[in-house]
Amino acid sequence: MIQLKKIVSGCGFMAISYFAFAQDIQGTAFTHQNWEVYCSNTGTCRAAGYQSDDGQQNPASILLTRAAGPKQPVRAQFALANGGEDSFAANQVKNIHFYINDKDFGAVAVKGVESPLMGTLSAAQVNALLKQASQKTKMSFKNSHYVWNISDAGMTAVLLKVDDLQKRIGTTGAIVKKGSANESNVLMPQPKLMIKKVKTADQPYRTLKPNTKQYQSLHTRLLAANPKPKETDFCEGIYNGADKGAKPQPIQLYKLTNGKVLATTLCVRGAYNEGYGAWVLDQSLQGQATYVTEWATDIGSGEISSAFKGRGIGDCWLEQSWIWDGQRYVQNQNRWTGMCKNIAAGGVWELDQIEAVVK
Image 1 (cartoon, helix red, strand yellow):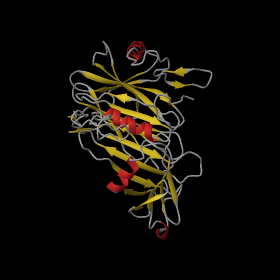
Image 2: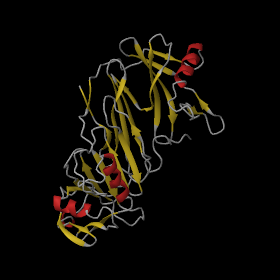
Image 3: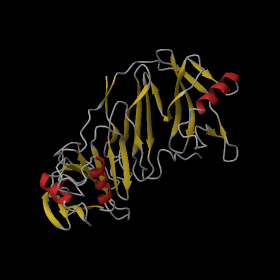
Image 4: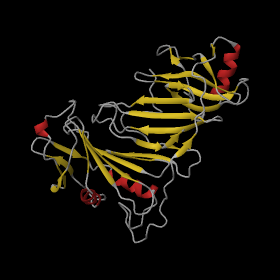
């Protein structure tokens, strides 16, 4: 069985950075214990904390969001789940309060009774939380029926990463490492990436089978475009059993524009996911191929998309996509829905590394 070790590694997601074309800021991810942060090409950082993994905690999460630039506030949302249940009894979700180190910082408002309960913290509640960012902190939401605890394990490291990426360390606006400097030199926000989509064929015009000479020549050319040549398992194909090795799969060709074609082939299949490799090359099928991804799950008209399940209690997803702009595929989305912590099916947050507008 092929493991999706390059994309999903259990429920802990490894730090990855992606470059967004024509942007000065790289999207970045960092995870430590029960907290994670994702900063996008706009400079906005989204840090999420969750319950501990001791098996006795009700699923819960806090999301702290801060845009780049001087004097930007930290905004906080929360999600409070009912384990495997879809909803709460209406009389059991009233009068929920937010506590820090057992001190009551007031009631929070939640919407409806569906799980997870969603809401936002007030500015005063956020400020009280941030004052504890570099200390051991007990964070709780509770009423007479439920208690939800947010772990502080990893919080300081993750919020320090936000300070660092937004160049706030040593400034009056830092969350963890405050100083006396003003924020005149902090990271400035960037606009979302703008991409003009050019439509292409959504069905292949040709399929090359592995037993042909042209297939063998093209397959070699595609594998030569490996972005990580030290990895020997790049686009192995499908395994024929534990002792038979991997078998290359047919290559499908799609017409693009400007004399280019898209070549795809099934690269990997695991228990929960499968991924197709995608490359751009000249319509003559000669010359160097340009690698796009090894993890495509859908090929559309001018778009390649990828969606992979994370491993853990409750589905979470890594979603990526690339848009054909007439010359190349430009990545317009790289989003993680948060740790697999049983808070909501499909994940609860939109943690972006790339934000774009497609026209």
